[in-house]
Length: 277
Image (cartoon, helix red, strand yellow):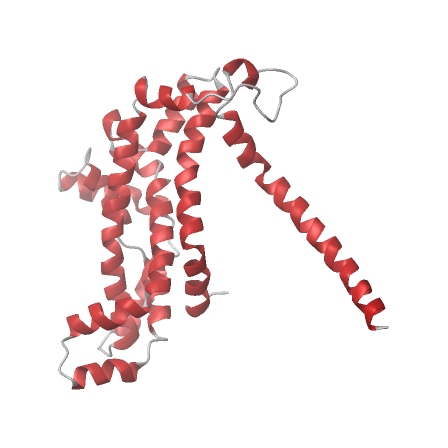
């Protein structure tokens, strides 16, 4: 009887597993098609009926992006925007720590204002932000592209939610031992906040790497465009070479996948401990 029950239990499990595998393959098929299409010769990419696997794979279109187009500069600009955005992680961590562990007048209204910023669409604030940066003479600069993404209300909220889980007794003990607030933050709070820092690294990287509309608005010089803008221009200028477009799209997507895979364990842990379901 136990063997019969175990066999009956395996049936639904196998069916569910097979359904999940099929669903995963269907979901990942466009990504696989993009990657395989990036190494197809142009004759195969426009062939009918289309083939999934390339007969003669070639990396020539990746070389074309950097040698004949300006994607090397676009890549450097995108990396610079991401690096500048990463500097905002410390500022947002400090803000989250202040809201989580300090008691001061106006804390609740100020945190409410932080939450309100999450409800305002980015498009609403683009014109005021542009006017401010134009007055500071930061248009047509990489700093002007990266500055609006330096901090965000959602990230401050995540840091605050996570840092409320840090034992206050530990912080009080450090204060009694004579540790300064800066030392407590750098030596105790930040090391304990590695999961949420990993979450923020992934979110900040994705936001900076995918930046499209704002660089297109604030940069009049093509030398300041990011990768996403470059891919858009490629789609408009070279519409008859699907392999080249697939290569540019693969270059755009691959780093995001690598970063997420590297930090996925910390991402799940950080969202769990921050109270988000």
